[in-house]
Amino acid sequence: MSNDIKIGSDVTAQLLYVGEEKTCVIVCDNVLEDVNAVRDLAISEADFAAESETAYPGRRAELSRSYAETVFPLVASLIRDNYSLPDASRAHLNASYFSLVTLAPEELSLQQRIPHFDSANPFYFAAMQYINAGNFGGTSFYSHRPTGFENITVERTDELIKSAQSFIQRSPPPQNYFGDSDEHFLRLATVEHKANRLLIYPGTLLHSGNIRSTADIDSDPATGRLTTNMFVEVR
Image (cartoon, rainbow, N blue to C red; front, side):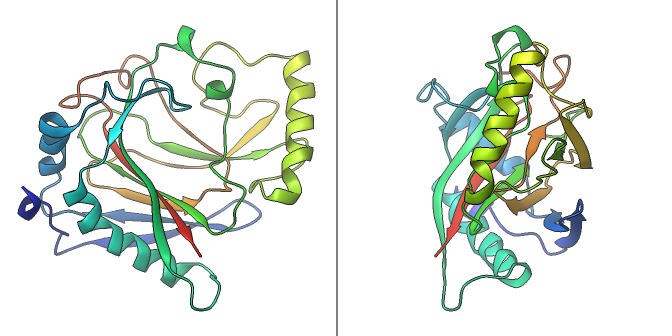
């Protein structure tokens, strides 16, 4: 099966510089020779029942080793080439998953209804690939209006939390997936969904999936908004 996962011969990479802080987001298309081979791995190998408690609004399963071994070197190379990193540092794969959005809006926790960040570590990165073709939502990046923060570092975390808690007490977010801007978060950019597209961005950057209940909520890896997710720490 591992021979089915191969990097494509015509991979393209575009750099987006998001917001006032000009955070680099890497968008790669045509990443794999046959992206459907990844879907087939998810159908045949992934145990989505194995992880039920997660901050992700759905189900996750361990990512196939064959996929990680093929795609991680490309991700590490792109991170090394496009971000300012400590000298002599190396990229390490911290966690990796198949992911499916499965929660209905009424099931979402508070944290799942607002943009979030993955880590306050400036050398922590997320790499997400869209697998299935379909009319699915993409991914958007945000700034926090009261503070102006776009990247949430250790120094900014307490101020963000205090401001967000105060706002939520006055005006709780609606029981739905986050989408457009509101009075608390400003949408800076959106990367649309496209099968075989890979996004890489710093884990400090506020973001949210553009989830629409009519298209994106599906527990079947053959037809749902299937993504691969790799979390990379450079140290």
